[in-house]
Length: 481
Image 1 (cartoon, helix red, strand yellow):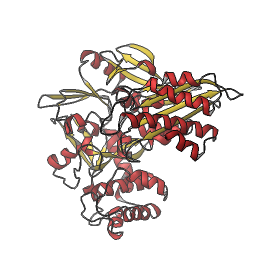
Image 2 (cartoon, rainbow, N blue to C red):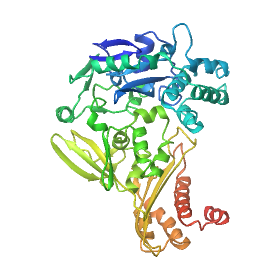
Image 3 (spheres, rainbow, N blue to C red):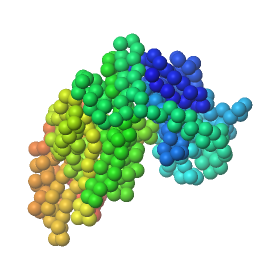
Image 4 (tube, one colour):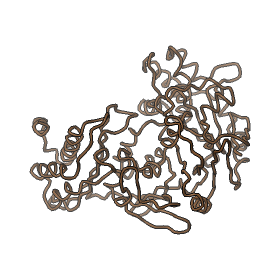
């Protein structure tokens, strides 16, 4: 059984297939067809809805892709779809803005844009174009063009008006708090089960008893097995109700991130300490995905093209793992074993990720190369951190790449070529040649092997240029040739 608010209505679902997405639940179970399916993979944003939760006694709103969000994620939250925006017999001001700014043509994508604008308005404190572009980057429009949509965003952010959601905030908080308790939920139907533990101890117990179960955090990757590959998920353990897994803290020498912390919350926490990490996360999919996707999930799926593992490898991150009552610490260097294979033992899960703070003598940079600037998967991802002494000699190097091997991987020969030498064009040339010893990349539909190797070298040159400012445009061109 799960309980949640559908706008202001308390909904209790006793028997519901846990593989049901929020999109299909709205359209098929609730007959609310305003929310559209465009891709079933979280790419286009047509299915965008808003989830509200209570935080410090206030409502916090986030956009999510309902096409890849399972209904178990609704437990204890408020679900707001485009039909809920109406203000009595009137349109909501974001809907009026889309209309008056002529920001809709065929209208298929418009419900998703309306929900993104609604949530942007709730979370903004005035008009900031970059913030609006981030909020709308996960919504694609194929016929109208984005200028009138941006105009609508500016209108609602510059002149926000009180709405029914603000007026009913205290009432909404009270309703949501009333359905929060220590009871463990379970959804079961049609041979599929989803368990929703609320503590780490219970999670550890369940995973020991059912090591074959799939762990569901944000589900932005796991859900594709259902929506794209049509593979069943007979037993799922959902992590969304375990607050401890989302907890993050700052220690004297490190930032400790809960494995269940969303990528968006990780970006917010890391921005003052490792700004390059946070900047790259702005290009990680879309805001809808970052609101749901978790750091632990991005690591645990073992993808060779995940964006966070190369950065964490360069930063010398360590993992805290739990199996039953046993807890161990493992350097991330030792976590990735082979393609989509990790060092996790049966019944073991990632508890947290410890990221050392960057010191004044260390220089961390990271870049993502993909076909599109935003909302795309990396062809090559490079992360670099060198430490130099007072004389400019490299004393330590950690360089890692994604998209260059079967796993995210450090470039150990490249690192060795740099350590002990001053950072010059000569040492750079040696390090670039050493990358050929570190990697033998594959060709696929994203990039050829030769392109990947060339890009990896060029990213190293870019890192060198960012530190020394010695390379001229002519010299960069010479290197490429």
